Amino acid sequence: MSNAQIEIQLIASLVAIACAIPGTFLVLRKMALITDAISHSILPGIVIGFFITHDLSSPLLIILAAASGVLTVVLVEFIQKTGLVKEDTAIGLVFPALFSIGIILIAQNANDIHLDVDAVLLGELAFAPFDRLMTGETDLGPKSLWIIGTILLITLGLLFAFFKELKISTFDAGLASALGLSPVVMHYGLMTVSSITTVGAFDAVGAILVIALMIAPAATAYLLTTNLKKMLLLAVLFGVGSAISGYWVAHALDASISGSMTTVLGFVFLIVYLFAPNKGLFSVLYRQKQQRIEVSLLTFLLHLGNHQEEEERHVKHLNEHINWQKVQSKSVLDLALKNNMITINNDIVSLTKKGKSFTTEAIDYIVTNKNSEIENMKDRFFLFRG
Amino acid sequence: MSEKIAVQIDDLTVAYNYKPVLWDIDLSIPEGVLMAIVGPNGAGKSTLIKSILDIIKPIAGSIKIYDKPYKKQRSLVAYVPQKGSVDWDFPTTALDVVMMGTYGSLGWIKRPGQKEKKASLEALEKVGMLSFKNRQISQLSGGQQQRIFLARALVQNASIYFMDEPFQGVDATTEKAIINILKELRKAGKTVIVVHHDLQTVPEYFDWVTFLNVKKIATGPVKDIFNDDNLTKTYGINYKVSIQQ
Picture 1: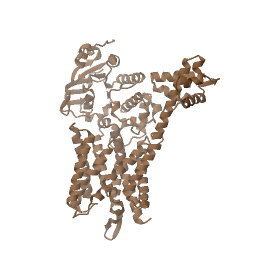
Picture 2: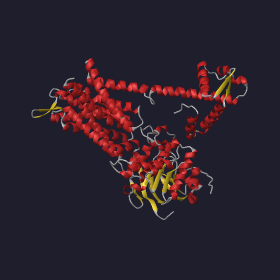
Picture 3: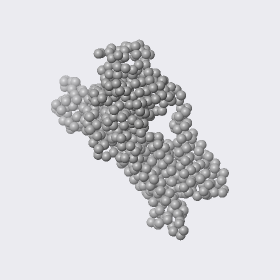
Picture 4: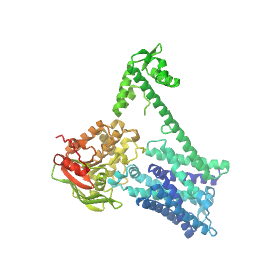
């Protein structure tokens, strides 16, 4: 690996971490769409900053861009508060307006300055190592590395200081407010950090793909854990992992780095979405199937309990009267047998003692819906129910 | 019940988008009562609580908690919001939610430690949820979630408790368990204010009641004012309830 390659991967990783942290809270606050808005509407801030400083990595430019990001949030909330339109409509109104102002500003001055729409939308990580921070003759490394490093340090500092406040204002803003832990301050703090991070990541991945870096790692982590700290950690790991492997995919295919990173992010999400242990699609389908069998079993046991006559308890009766397919009848019978709930003599099915008490308790549970009962039953009988 | 006033509200008016939800409310809540706030949907019951807790800014009026503004008395007040107001899919455990009750006394930046954890575990035990302490909150039933909220308020160890529909969507056992804890709080001299929907249980559960429908209709001891006249004034139709006393 060359120095430039290491630097690019380092920048991409820091961008991924800096995005994953605010992204986690945005996902939990159901505000994913607002990152989309922010990432677009910081453009006029960047353009105006660029006109003034002629330097894409000047602090003034970052401040102006972050300010236009926060302005977006303020405008969205202002429009929403009128009660005339809903939040999604307000977002849809505000950010195209600001973004288009930025586009017009670029187009009008495109001849004089080095800032084109492609670079703004997609970023160009491959060029990041060329723009270096120098003090006299000493090379201190790429400027983007310093910028995103500084932003990441601030983000981490704020996260450690205000983790408790962020958590409570995200989970229960009402209580946070009553306790004097101002959720409004937290809200605008998070919006400011998100805006600043977006600007910092902008150079590397551009306005559109920064959304993927904020939302995809957090959404993936959300499917895998029920613990906020673990969710943050997983989001960071997914972000960094996808950033680095995305770089190598781009290297192999000779393709855009930001495009490859986002593709990897999407792919990782898809895998987790399908195979996550509890919330994954397959796991949910499997659980539903088991619950269906469980209900069938109960129906069958109830039927046995209600009928003493042998013809109602004949194995064949399952197919004829209860009208089940052979496969279903067999899996229900097998399940009941395996758990010693029935015995079969000459194709006549009888409830065992265990089968009887299970039926009574299960009916009792369904009728009263007392949740304490089910814990009890899970211990004594088999049950799939979560 | 002593003569002290726990909550004093004068001329309170609250509006959403210039549409008044509460009109000129005067209300004194004596210390040590277990009070129900009743009224139809949209009567402003939750808004009243949120205004007292400074979550909503009123357009007029003053609210005092033991003679001082709420901001100076936060530590005396605990709050149980409506269960539906939070996202129960939030990645956290029952114990963690209860610990949030300690965040107020901790203040900014400080993290909860062993002392806060111990208090939270005790509160969980009081509501009979200790064995669920590590359960993810979406895996709890409606009644269990409500108990967790109650535990979170208990851990605040306050003098005044505000509860927004604590009996909503809970089973009969949980309702009994909750009301027993509220009665214990009153015995310990605390003031408990509950937004309540089930008029049938008012005489059995509460000793004080406020009728509210945008304006305050009446407030006082249940045995004196919980009658058909006030119910009709509040709900607008002929309300007949049998009051067992």
